[in-house]
Amino acid sequence: MSSKHIKLKTELPGPKSRALMEKRKKYVPRGLGQYTNIVVAKARGAILEDVDGNHLLDFASGVAVANVGHCAEKVVKAVQRQAARAMHTNFNIAPYERAVELAGRLASLTPGSFTKRALLVNSGAEAVENTVKISRASTKRPSILCFEHAFHGRTYMSMTLTHRANPFKMGYSPFCTDVHRAPYPYVYRWPGNKDSDVVADECFQFFSDIAARTSPGQIAAVIIEPMLGEGGFVPAPKKFLQKLQAFCRKHGIVFAVDEIQTGFGRTGTLFACEQLGLEPDIMILSKGIGGGMPIGAVVGRAKVMDAAGEDGIECGSYGGNAVSSAAALATLDLFKSGSLVKNARKIGKTLEPRFAAWKEKYKFIGDVRGMGSMQAMEFVKDRRSKEPDPEKVNKLLDYCYERGLIVISAGTYNNVVRLLTPLVTEPDQLEEGLEIMESGLQAIA
Ligand code: PLP
Image 1 (cartoon, rainbow, N blue to C red):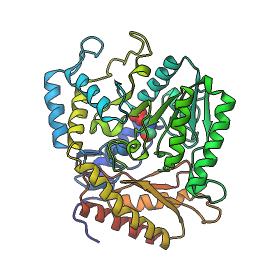
Image 2 (image 1 turned 90 degrees about the horizontal axis):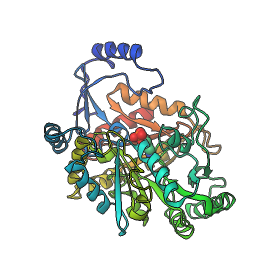
Image 3 (image 1 turned 90 degrees about the vertical axis):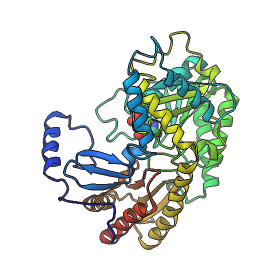
Image 4 (image 1 turned 180 degrees about the horizontal axis):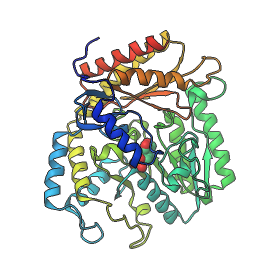
């Protein structure tokens, strides 16, 4: 096995990481999840360097954030430049040049030829919250429709929209009201082993029934991920999404697509909506937009976005932050040449046949799927019952981590291995990681 990029000087964790992790245990609430026990000193491209000098290969990108790679030079320079010019005045007092420019860029880059506005916020969850506020204000309707297996964040409304209770919602009830949930077209787990076309039709029928019971005239917004992120990289059939969009148009419902995880090149186009033929009324964005800096955005139809009256949407102290906006503009510049989305497709083309071959070989891999560079494998105890096998996923993740490769899981049942490599991952880095995964699969088989 080659190890050109991974360099382990100590066992993981090394002594410095171990000492800092002890401190973390003492001062940080235990509810914060923890995939690894190293502490990062530096990060570049697809490589993390920990405080003990170990170099690890990162196939998680900080959960789909470092699409342009860690510390991309242009982003770092933009951040430094902006930090030296102006950091904070508050957008509502005196907006920043870079933030206004960014709003314009997002309005023109997102799908839909209609006039748009962009609200800049600080995180994905905040973008989701504002989507709900704006949708209710613009339609003057109360109800929100969301989907099974969805993940939309950890604030109260976004957590209400999130489906999986354990661990995301445990102990936090009561949740927000007037949120209704429809099935997601999860083809692999749809009863009866049906093909995606049939699942799209049947699932849409369920959705229509739920919408009818809720009453379409009462529904402010339908919020959906075009491919589940935390829910296990499950792409919704194009046909289903298009029917959903048509239904929303017909009934004056805001069609809001959460591209927080799928956005900014991950799926092989800047936004997944482009390849799905969708023009949502609202695009909910975050993660990859900032190249590592915290920022989120709600980008939507001007008519919808302007519905909350003057001073109605206050974007908070930090919304449209100058430094984050500068980072986002630099990130968008990096996408201009098209090479990053091309690389996302190339990564996908390497992963797809590899995962398919592993599925042939290992009976515990029940399904492989994804879009572009977002590819996943779902582990099951046996293929007939499809009983989830999260233990094997954890074994594989541990195997990889011990050898310096960071891979993370997903899925309502925690039984999905997902790859979120930075889009700048070089072919030999990808190969190095895949070789480790392959020997890990052999070891746990
Ligand atoms: N929506 C989706 C699809 C996500 O994947 C996430 C985060 O994982 C969120 C919303 C919440 O974003 P944040 O963690 O920035 O609040």
